[in-house]
Amino acid sequence: MNEILLYFSLKYKGEWQKIYQAILKKEVIEENDFRERLNNFKNDKIEYITILDDLYPKQLMHSAQPPFVLYYKGDLSILSKSNKCIYLTGAYETQAITNYVNKLESKKKMSHF
Image 1: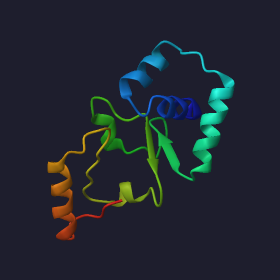
Image 2: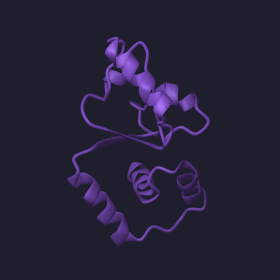
Image 3: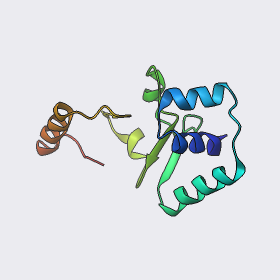
């Protein structure tokens, strides 16, 4: 099921509603498209976890539309070791958010990954 979530996330570029509808309607997956998208993803050397994984951040489960897939590079355990985390998902990055994150970074109150 994780690879199916990854496939839909790649196909629909993380758009929650489209992924949800694909799962709900049991969208037919073309095997060649499935393999091609997953192979291309693996070539990028990016890791992922899905909402079904034990390592998925529990804090995100409380949001109205938790991301089905989280992509990462590096040490995923940092999410569970940190006292405070800010999660930016989707297309929520605005200039105000960028300025706020930069301000926190400059005060050494956060790390930017």
